Image 1 (cartoon, rainbow, N blue to C red):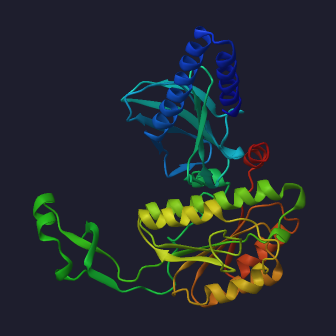
Image 2: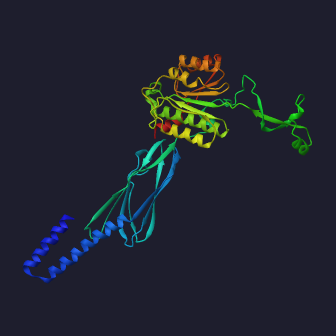
Image 3: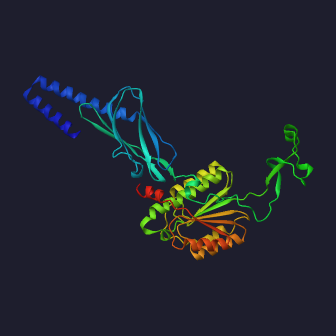
Length: 395
């Protein structure tokens, strides 16, 4: 801008000295174009309305579409407009998110691009930068977005049969060691009448419809929650595969939570990992039911990280499982189950919990720990899928 101004000033001075009309005319034309370009570009850029349309969440390995909507409220067009979006490295599927568009006066355009969610996480997309100029290159204007948009990438969710667990491994459906009272207000279906059933249990409408004696099946009056414990003590993970194994452990936890939530069972979670949005040493979500509650669990698992200073599983687990109700199922996901931690789980079993330990990394004494756990009332299973770990390690 300064160069054009001084060039016009020098040209005007020369025109005044030599008294040449065409030089005056050139000064007026170039100067007028220069002034108009300033007014045009700055006014047009100020009258742009920008909106980013991005999903609030996505799942690992999913591709999402982002839309940049631009409305030009001015009558004057913009010949070219460069858009450059700031995109986190783990979401990129190309090197540069930069493009050039043209937008007319009083018009609306939509620019789309795609993000590849290769890893779970809590990401911010943006800010968006705009750059434009007039056709003659006299003036250049820039604009930068204030703020950015958030995108939560949930952990990889896999069916339980892909976790490598025994086919009859129960989650929350274990036979209770104490008969729970039945709630007459919560009917769970009908069944055929058996000797000894009370006449008050007969479902008369169903009996008349089926032409055979049927009684009501009642659900337990006590909810038996499932409580997931995720061990993210970095020192417990094998050094050569710490990222792959920890990501698999988070995926296992999220998958079990999703499966049990679909069964309408109350699910809670606790982890000794680092939560960037919390100052608490241990991240905990109390057991509840519902889709919104499951989303809150997945959001926590999307952002939680390995903790190099985490307390060991055996040291922090007792305080965070002491309040579990009788009959609750405790599922512990850990890369290594020590003898001390096994005894902590045995104490939870003695308090009335159904206890399952899922080991997500190779453990040399696994068979010994599994056999000892069986004697102590703790079901110990291995959930190692080398193909999954390899796929995660290559991302």
